[in-house]
Length: 327
Image (cartoon, helix red, strand yellow):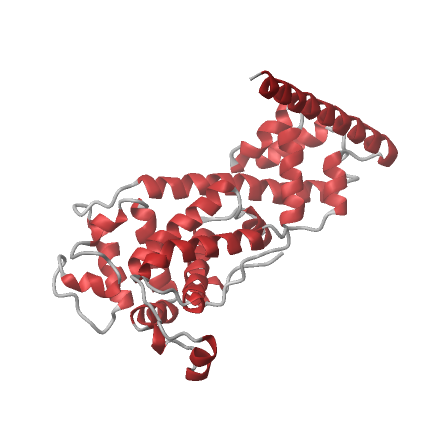
């Protein structure tokens, strides 16, 4: 017990020692360059995740209450906040016009990411309600987009299994992710219908996928286990949600959204993950569906590793993401 307390005491001392050294270094750099840390970051770091994440860390770790709270202000207050920061740091806006523009872009991304989490969380917490006409309409549209040539015989039907739901009423499958799962599935099916229908077809008949016979033989993909499209979509929604909440997606969003990331950006990212997971599943060639969790975890680790690169943007290969901008 005593050893644990000693270790904890040493860690606390090291933390404050390093923090003190960092403050001293910042002071010295300010004196040598004539610029504060925010200026040095904006002038020496290229736009995108590298700059925005450094600005975010600098603001959060500042001893100034104004800088600490600037990462959570309302979007409409960002311009005034930047003016207050410039005044606090004694920076002449006329001499440093680019600094205000750069800070505004960074704060829009930082605040936007925070607000996006709130929007996504709200959808996740809202349960599917079969008595809500809007919810029902979205569900029926999902069928229409995925199976345009096959009429749905009735709202409660075994046909739902054809697009990967577990039973004759899909509402029970949305319990984990709430409306967020339905929003994502419908977005994929509507905005990139051809790709969604192809993934659905491949999930039912994986050996009929875009891999040629020679590729199947080379990879020895003789098992070709399929999966339930809708259930996997809800599971990948969970993956995207956790990447967002953990902050792992900051790299991607700060690189592709020149201002505040929106729900559309999140849904486009979901489409990308669905597309990539499908390819990954085929390449992994699992023995049976019981290997799903293993394959999903391996896929999750690969995505996280990619996002650790500050220059990384998950570059989708489908129509839904043509509007993304990589700054």
